[in-house]
Image (tube, rainbow, N blue to C red; front, side, top):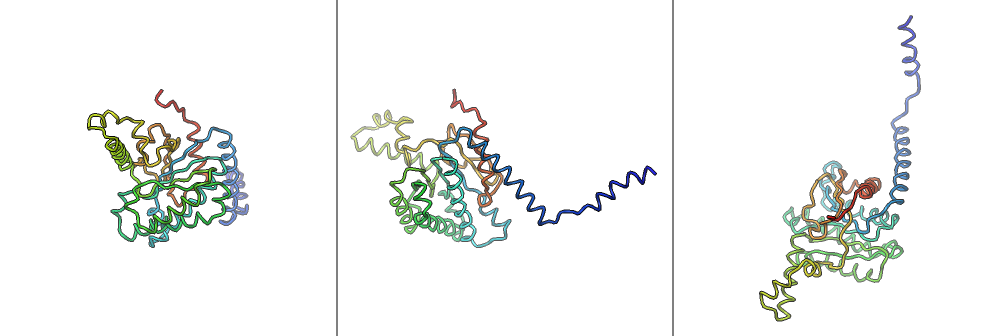
Length: 283
């Protein structure tokens, strides 16, 4: 008898209609949206970073998971994610974003891959200039890095984007292309010494002129505020040379999602983590 009573709830449960896979996906999407909205409200109510730097990592890993092999297609996916980052940042009122797209070390990759990256960046720069959201949001586009390693067509696209948006003051989006942190510091010191030489200083006087403030003036964008938050996608836990000088007091957040799969909820979580940090700036 007891066995029959115990079996009754199990039998009733087995007769309940089970959700189909499609229905489960609908329920999951609803739960996800509700959580995302709550998280967005929580983040919007807290202190927001003024400058967010993002290391775009995981394009190749994402391609392997998605079965993609065409380098152009792979990096176009990554370039398309920029539109979402702009929209999310504008919604929150974050005025400055710096995205690390390509480093001098990346030149060691296969030629087709390098071409895919630089071609996708060139196409994206040209598309952004024509995008009405760039004008409506007041986005100013800028680029930092060693221009001498970039192809002429990309340089022309960068110049056109910078010229077309130079009067905008709502948000600054900087693409770090051909950028390396060590290269930036070396270039800054070189420029400082050239300035000293131009002023007729001898070696001793030039050495005395070297200071953190003087070097900072000669960084690629010397007036750029340091990033408050740096995000790296794809689960790697290192900066790899991104903004070495400027990141001394940055809060760091490492996200497992690959760059093309980076979601609004991942961005919001990174900012929430920033808001929960006690920033003492060495004090």
